Amino acid sequence: MKTASFLLSLLLVLPASVPAGDTMPQGVPDAARSLQKAFNDAAARGGKAVVSIEVVREGSARVVEPEYFFGYMMPTERVYRYDIQGVGSGVIVDPEGYILTNYHVVEGAKAIKVKMLSDKGRERVFIAEPVGGDAEMDLAVLKMRSAEKFPYLRLAAEKTPRIGDWAIAVGFPFGLRQTVTAGIVSARGVSLKIEGRNYSNLLQTDAAINQGNSGGALLDIDGDVIGINTAIISPSGAFAGMSYAVPAAEAARVFADVKAGRRVRRGWLGVSLLQMDPVMMARLGVRGRVGGIINEVIAGSPAENAGFRRGDIIVSCDGTPVETNEELIHRIYTRRPGDRAEIIFLRDGREMSASVTLVERPEAGLAAAKPARGIAGVGAGNASWEGIELRVGRDGAQVLRVSPDSRLYGYIHEGDLIKEINRSPVRGAAELKKAATGADLREGVIFDLVRDGQPMYLSVQSQR
Image 1 (cartoon, helix red, strand yellow):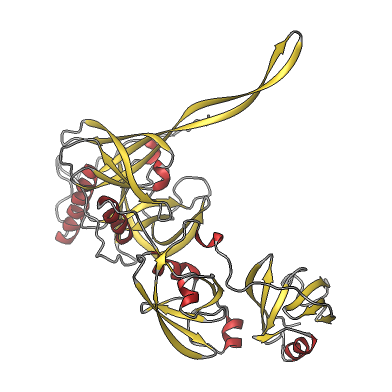
Image 2 (image 1 turned 120 degrees about the vertical axis):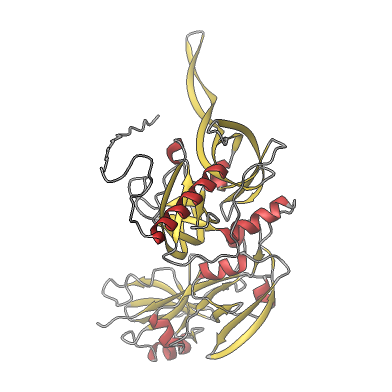
């Protein structure tokens, strides 16, 4: 077991100019006093409705132990089970005792205990049960076993925090007593991957958040919840100035579904995008336009039914510009099955639009789906180009070898199946020669290929 040690330092400052009992010296501008009061009020509201969550999970270990029978040693495997303790934070968002927290805080828990302070500062303990949530959004809803009314915080779903706005974090770091820290909203719409979980559209703040703060509240200066604190990035495991929260608008949607007894259902389009780089934009003739190129269309998906093709460039969804796969997923994932998504896209340089009815997102996500376009066999016929040896057939050019001296070395891999070069199909030796003749690596080349069974676009530019 790891043991955490803490060095606590006490600094005592007694300025003679501050009379006993005053919270601020005389002569301080009214604006500063008003700001101070706003922080005090927000902290007081958060203190009443942000709770500590303690969970118990069951762990197990398999151990091979020797047993002796008549002088012979027989190895026997035994399974030992034990309890694992975990801590986090939560936010009461409804007077009936509903709590929002992170899914990872309570995932796999066999017992959940909630601790909060009474108006008189006494600790109160309640048993809570999970009633629903959304693992993809890392949000869970708990319900305390009690019929009383609780203080709660309002989810400010209608507010759009601006970069530079005050941000106040309330929670129980390291399982210690409740703390309040302050900073600003540092960024919006952040996408990242932490411990195998993909996050998108997060708020970033420099308010101090540490382990144990997960599931706590991120408040604005009015004391309203603008986010549920979720993750940090830190080389040391402690606060390093980069903390993240799920926006209140998304938390409110999950909570509304769970409280109403509805299963959380998410819309699905059925495409994956690649962000375009300058080479792709130049070769595809879309300079000055943002957008993401469709890398894959899933068979049987709404996208395929609406006529989308691989190579189309999606520039907006419901009027919001789209450049990355994460941005499109967020725009679609926050919608429900049956909703319509208005997509603007480019095909062969022409702007087009489509209104697509979304369906429920498959349980296993895109990983379980199959590409709409399969790969048939590759016929015989060898060729070479730019230091790579190819076997050309009706479905593309299979890469047999890449010379270390080739300008494509490190980009093209052995085993790749090249389908197109600069949007020109490669379905035989004649087409390969035509496509290769018009390709200049100094200007940049786009390859459409299949690698390890997955389609992908690859851009290469070399000045040598």
